[in-house]
Amino acid sequence: MGKRLRGLSLLLLMGMAWGLSFSLARIAASGGIHPFSITFWEALGAGGALIVVCLLRRRPFPITRELVVFYLACGAIGMVIPNAVFFYAAAHVPAGILSISLAINPLITFLASAALGLERLAPDRVIGVILGIAAIMLLVGPQQSLPDPAQLPWVLACVAAAGCYAAFNVMVSLWKPRGAASFTTTTALFTMAAVQLIPVMAVTDSFVLPGWPWTEVEWSLLGLGLINAVAFSLFVYLIETAGPVFTSQTANLVTLFGVLWGIVIFGEQNSSW
Image (cartoon, rainbow, N blue to C red; front, side, top):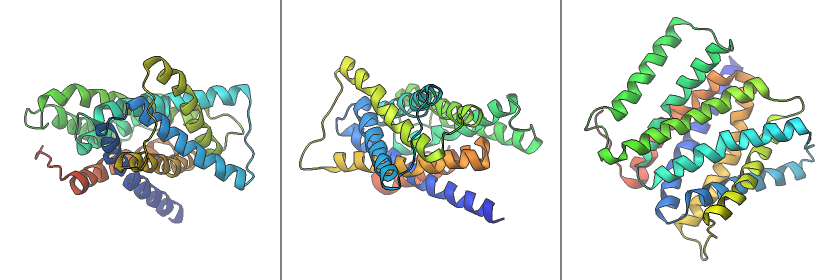
């Protein structure tokens, strides 16, 4: 019971933190920061903070060929691709709608885990998948569900990006090499994501240096980095201890808190759908 309560508490904490990140992303994107640059500063801030913790705690940081490949894949699938898509969409879609699109994450995670034999196809879980698909259809189907029908392509892009998070869940559960502790894996994920984005920003000329004095845009970038440093560490830990499907339920809480933060910060109003 204690283990389950701890897991549920961590889910709640991650849901509240990551739910806030959609509003912070909207602030940064609306402030003119390029999505690649937002993702870079987010990854650099989180990776830098975790590297300092590793040094202070004298944690070993194993590096092998297999681990480097694993870290690169985690950085690309778990952060670079989905976060860049979400940040592109953040300038066009309300924060609450962005968070609702994450509802597809547990569905894809469960279906992939069931197909790979990591989870069993229980009737209640199948019903959950059906209800989750229905929820997505209510988000993008009725004409009155979105504030502007032109936002539909961005919502569908976010749904696809959420699929990357589902792939990351399953990948960590199946592939995580020996010696890759959850904390060092998270540190390497952010560090590799930042490294991968350097040539991307050079080619697209999208690097943006934070201004001074700091405005709400710079503070939102700092908040994104800190949120991801803490939440992603907990996320990888839960995948290891509670499994990918249980951990993927974070998306449901992110959806709830993302909508609530959008209402509190931006005064967003969502349709009855």
